[in-house]
Length: 93
Image (cartoon, rainbow, N blue to C red; front, side):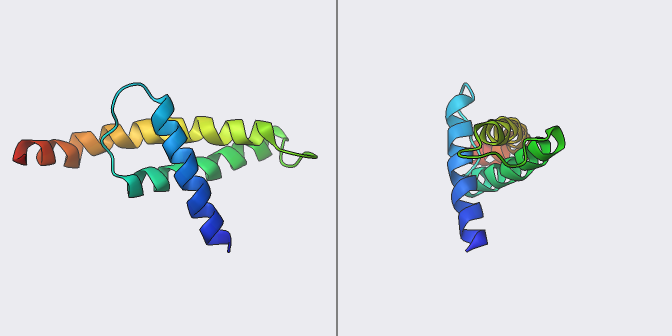
């Protein structure tokens, strides 16, 4: 069940990150989901390092760290994707 939740959270974080980043992102949905999963992991690590590991109720600060990390990772990976695979696909079309 843990992997299923990781995929769902990664999917949601990746989509929110794509919606926040200005402009069009060209990375596929599976790559966005993986970036969202990585953002969740990095955000949890940052929250734990700062000392907001667990609070009562909803951990809003942890979720904000996860979202910020997902935004950074999605933007960086999309730029790398366009620099490598994306341009070749656009030239073929």
